[in-house]
Image (cartoon, rainbow, N blue to C red):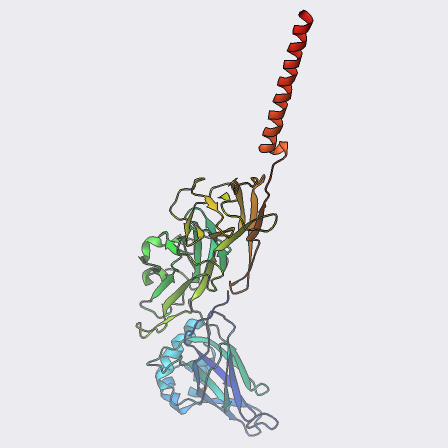
Length: 498
């Protein structure tokens, strides 16, 4: 499916930007381009600010350059008491120290540590899309870039993701975000007659189901980056449509471990919330798979296609996003799936296309099981309470010859006629109806075929082989002929013996 978060974990990166301000033939300023290739996060609305850590200095002919600490950061580097082995002076030692920082954890720690010394931003940009932003007009130097989030930050919540260096032949830096944030993806993993919370490697965004069947769901997520956190909120909220009755069988797995008992699961009406505590999360490595599985029964309240929304069900994840303020949380956009139910539409007519009322049929599925129905407002609907018996599975054509049966999944069904309209012949074979649906990439049902049927009954006598009145007439006629023959034979014998 196909889903992006509204906000990503804040980031910081060190960027060396050299321009040709002092070298003839090169541009006077540079730029930092930030791109995102992770569809689990979004840059849209985030403000990125660049802070210069080092100025660039050149020799007399400007063929060699060096770095000098920007005034705002001198005190910071003096307080570090950097080892003399890193360089001949503080500027050299500071540059060696910063340029050697690598890995998310180290960059995040550095960003938090230096944030309070950063001074005024040298440049900034607010992203207007999910995947790209450019900070332009930057002088030569080595920059620290912060993601200030999608609102004015209250403190130093920024986290490091990468660093990158440029040469004078390439004054424009491009940085690909490597933010690690919790993701969420909800799928439908099966439809059956029994509840199930088994995990599956495959799933769908949309399926069809029959009333009273059970639909299995799976939510896939990951263990977030917990670096620096002393507590963490990880809460999944799953809101089911009125069509579904939760089986209350949720199971939570991290990696291969069942952590259901350690999680808090609350069912409230159509909403299920699952909270995995920090004490559990922190025992697993970042990006370890989190799997939540459960099922729900389709009720008689389900919407029937062509309801445009189907029966939509959504899950979202609330998670912590500020290592310094645990009250700040973010929520992923909903991950949505849909369940569709369809209708069989039968028209009963004679061979003159006149509508016939009173034809009785028994409805069965492809496994020859009765499907119980109830009649309401002129339409039949699959029952979620009646027993599956022949009587409960009987449908009758109305005055317009119509039989509507709502609440069925895709598949093949049979309607066996048990009573034909008066003066009409009973159908010899069951009527077969096969429902098929088409879905688009977003799980929307776009077409249904095979669910309409016109059934013809013929009036008049039947041939002997059909077992109707024609057979009776021929049998009676044969008996009369035989009796006549017996009478003639008996009379002849009496005459011969007289």
